[in-house]
Image (cartoon, rainbow, N blue to C red; front, side, top):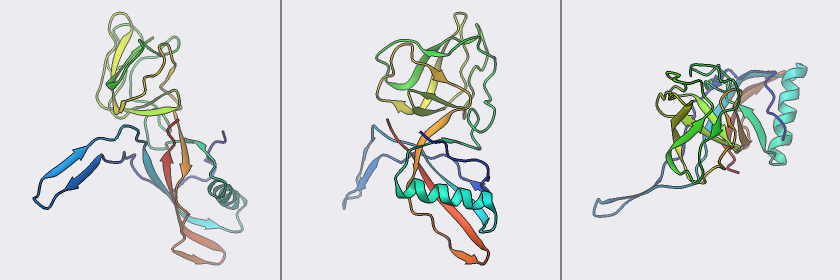
Length: 205
């Protein structure tokens, strides 16, 4: 799976968002709500100026055209997210792999093990982690106990339980994603294109 290139950095990166659940307002004013099970993160990235005479800029545009045309699934780093493009905010350095601790896990928490014993704030709210190519955001600070176990509050909920012992990636996390919309260029003037915005969506395995 190719990595989305980061040679040419975007000028703007949006926050990560998750689609809302299903909602409907009846004529009587009553609101009906229903959660969706499989949801993925979405975000935008914008480049202010791409010069047609710059080989790096044109390399990025050629990559984007090919990836969109062929619906290529990409490994993409999240530039403004701790644990991905930024150093994670969680504390402590595990001596080995962090793994899922127990089978048949669903809900808003993920049981993990392999952390330094009694590590305060092993994960911090806003850190990204991934398990079996599924991206999660830590929704609240969590510490490890004396056995190196840590119950991590996550968003979105865990709906398809990962395997017991599956590796939990906590650094250099990438999102399995694709470019969802045709890139638009509101203005252009030789020899440059202005304001290329890409809409990314996470691809749920």
